[in-house]
Length: 484
Length: 112
Image (cartoon, rainbow over all chains, first blue to last red; front, side, top):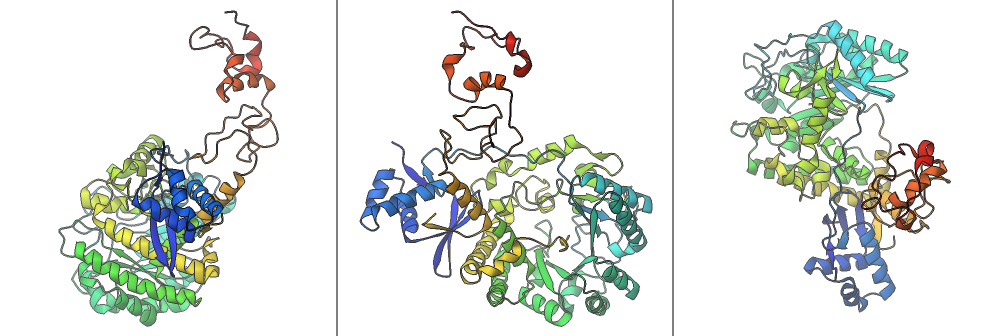
């Protein structure tokens, strides 16, 4: 006779209540006393439905017990032993529309950040001696815009993100690409949303004016207060960049009010003080939001965050996330964007087949018009999907998507955090293991710990301030997606 | 759902789907994952289309020619008696019938 068993989920408590995060559906349910009791029983061992029910009849009215078991079965928190059929691998539909194109307008940079994935010790593309032009030409930029609008399919809005190198080193092409994109978009009945990432060294009043006037979303790469910024974000002579960028950023924040401007911080083993960085960037510099990401590097670099570093990082993230929760409960803004981004995914119940949109809804274009998985691979022949002139090689794209599907990542198959993580960044995996398809096993504990934290924040908000979560229902189209 | 509170949007969608399972959907099995592919042929028993809406609520595959019911009874449904045994005795029974609505006349009777 068949027995009932627990299915895949992560259980957690928040605000004194019991919750389950179901995998792979990514649905969250709060348990009442009866449903928690059913799950507790099945935690001990599997048992026949009748036996399970009878064990609980003494504690709860019989119809309630039967109803609860039926409900848990229906949402697949529990199921008949051995019948958990693995759902078929679902591939994205063909000709998936392109949502975001990241244009590497130059691969030159006026800084020499030691940890840089484009120039540093772990670079993929031979930027200095390679065949790639240093600057994208106006013509290539125009061809890229045409490519983007073509590939956007039925989408009404296309996102165009400028990237580098240092993006502003090719400001003329950025400007002309924008006006061309506007023109072409108007002809095809679409809208284009613009954003860029910059190190802020080249911000001048007229550039700031232009960005503000054109509602360009801006993400600034900055690592924190002077002593942290100047450790890695240096000029080629080794001189730190803080004193140059700080006043320019303040100028930008003062003038550019049409969109929120975010800071994007790279964390290293030597600059791991998240609260201090956050406070400096929000209170002293004035950023609206700050997002953090650990440096992408092979593990032997001295700035790499080692395992103990991930634990320390998680603890600090949690402490800052606690502030976020406090603010959210009081309907106050808090700029720790890592929490907000995760809450949004939790809210929607995102269950990913791929860690990100690379090679699907997002692509990177190198200075000569080669199309790659994302900006981090732009210019790499090994990760090329096509060119802006000839379009995407669908066979290459499909074989990439086949190979990188979550169902192919056996390491992830039993992890409850896979709906949100899906194995993590391809570029990180490539740098770490030399293989984009490998899951990033070096930070699994960190991902699970962080996901658990965000689930708890979400659940607590759902009890104490559910209105706060409604903001995630319809995301404003214009919010810049930070590219880093 | 009485004993589970749907917390996020995904849970709410699942609850709505689960609640709608109480609708009369004839012999359709509940809780299949993922939703089975829609086969737009037509049989009242599995409430697939030809009528108001298919079981996903869509209307794209409605109004199939009645001739296609011939296949539906043994492909989309469980009704073996009406058609010859195509595995053993009449493997070529439909060989001349490439498109049912056009070629249905070519399907002949089979005498054992």
